[in-house]
Amino acid sequence: MKIFRKIGFALSVELLSLTFLPSTNHQTGIRTGWAITSSPFFFELVMRRYRQALSRERCIEVLERGTSGVLSLIDSSGLPYGVPLNYVLRAGTIYFHSIGVGRKIDAIALHNRASFTVIDQDQIDSGRYTSLFVSVIAEGTIARIEGEEWITAFDALCCKYSADRPLAERQAKVSACTKAIGLKLTISSMTGKEAKELAGVSYP
Image (cartoon, rainbow, N blue to C red; front, top):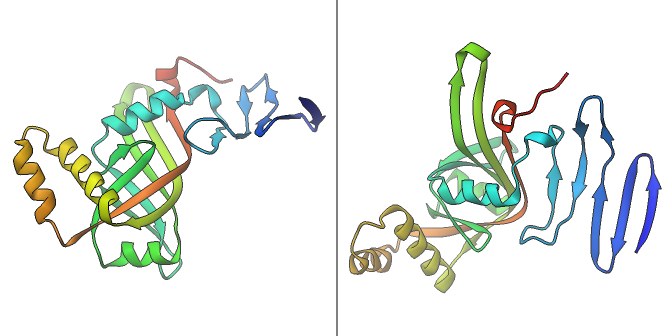
């Protein structure tokens, strides 16, 4: 392993593993930089308020627990477009269902980069003039899916949102749904953050 230091950054190269380790201002507790991990996600952004960051495991728990989020895209006019959607997380990939036409589909056809935000908690604390929040943002590429992958994803969606329904009924619903299409967000980076009050940290 070779280590090179320059401008407060450490660049570590070992085999095919590459990690950027940024320096920290110990007076403010602020750190910035990129970390490329061996997780199912390609890289993760180290946020400025890193002491409020959620672990990868907690991020996954939030995504698994959530029932809706906002998919953010760039539309065909180059404008930001956010749409609330139900979803399911399966093997490190987020799946959605959609009608096959519309602003969302047009946007994806032109720009396949997207982000998806899930708010796990948002409790107003009026006395402290703040919100006790927990949220996760996943970024990556989004694409249309078909065939067996879509059937499997749609079944997972039905299982998540209608788990109390009989299996045969859910399977029939999947087989009968011919108008919906599948979308998948392949996650390349993911960050989660909680309020400093929940994280138990303070800043000068």
